[in-house]
Amino acid sequence: MEQKNRAWKVAVIGAGPAGVYTSSILLKRLEEKASLLDIPEDAHIDVFEKNPAPYGLVRYGVAPDHPAIKLISQALDRAIESEKISLYCNVCYGKDIGIKDLLPRYDAVIFATGGGEDGKWELAGRKIEGVCSAGEIAGWYNSMPGLTCPPLSSRAAAIVGGGNSALDVARMLLQDPYSLSKTDMPHDIWAKLASSCVQEVHIFIRRGVEANKFSAPQIRQLKACSKLILDDFSKESLEKFDPQERTAREIKNELETSGPENKKKSYMHFSSSVSSLFAPEKKLEAIEISRNIGGKKSADFCLRTNLCVSAVGWRSKKLEGIPFDESKGVIANNEGRVKPKIYVSGWAKRGCNGLIGSTKADASQTVDMILSDWKESGQKEIDDSPMEAFLNGRNVMFSGKAGWFVLERYEAALGKPDNKRSVKVKSAGEMRRISSLA
Ligand SMILES: Cc1cc2nc3c(=O)[nH]c(=O)nc-3n(C[C@H](O)[C@H](O)[C@H](O)COP(=O)(O)OP(=O)(O)OC[C@H]3O[C@@H](n4cnc5c(N)ncnc54)[C@H](O)[C@@H]3O)c2cc1C
Image (cartoon, rainbow, N blue to C red; front, top):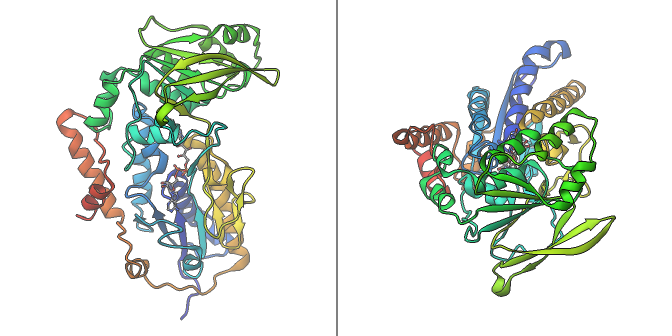
């Protein structure tokens, strides 16, 4: 079969921002540069997503009360509208499809699988009711299928971690129910948060105030829904902290004031960690806090709580047949190149931190790597039989782009009566049923 100058065929695993940006940047770059590189300028990209809906953490991580960021999904929609991109939802790499199926069919396989695992928290307590990760609680309030409401029955909740996702979770636990009522949460999730007993959130940050990782706007938003209180040790550390850099000065300024009087409180405890969990009958009742000073831990106080959330970051998940860098928790790569024909982009490439915007720059680097490899290698023969037939042969109940757009319109219609942009469907079966109406 004559295959010279055919369209390049690319598989992208993961339809989060990295997968979508990498796809659209690759198409654009080919249009602009293919003739200069003397390679075919046409490409077709198949994007495989394990969930029934695309967009990864834009849908299931970003807090519902950040509607402007949630709107990035509209830009991602515009990108995948391209007829050169096909979407296959409900297709999980490692289960429904593997690298041996992909390599003969594609000129490049790009992994954009994000951060699939929670970072390591030294305290093993995951089987205890009331101990969960930020990914689980953010997934729950974002309607991720299969997740349940954590206990919200105690006055105090604890969060371990000093990054923006710790503050996101704190804010969501303390947020005024009225302001959440306009988000895309289904009513039952909203009702659970609205009737929560949590009145104060304690944030335990392992390192000192000088090493904090959250942003000034995030602290401002927390102060808009709660009174911010630093414990005495943290207050003293803050006084001694004299940053020269502008962003750190802004953070210090924000931490120096409590915000308006509010019956809800957010406490920050720097140089602190949770040293034990009290959980008779495997239900969390209290935690013990230690202060970390000069590399030594000393017991500090106990807090009665039914909820302790670990927000200590994420790691990428090891994928079948793909080299993994255990120390960094990412797919092993050199500027996006993993092995011949295999590439990586987004959190799975550079580690699980950074905002959606940084994913774009990162995607661009991976695309440069692919183009330079294509110029070197030229086109080889591939199996261009239809992917639909392959997936049907494996009994994979995939849904395509049309199915996603139907689901999106359905969610928009659910929001209409309450003047909301949309309300999410949270059952995977229901999502699949609606998508199948396309
Ligand atoms: C709680 C939280 C809040 C955040 N809030 C903000 C914010 O307010 N603003 C901001 O700019 N950034 C925010 N971020 C960061 C932002 O979400 C990330 O920068 C971005 O989502 C990373 O994109 P990604 O595509 O690499 O990963 P992801 O968004 O995780 O996408 C990966 C995709 O791959 C899919 N996938 C994984 N494994 C497989 C497999 N085996 N087969 C098929 N598909 C697979 C996943 O289902 C997912 O759809 C937040 C992150 C978190 C965790």
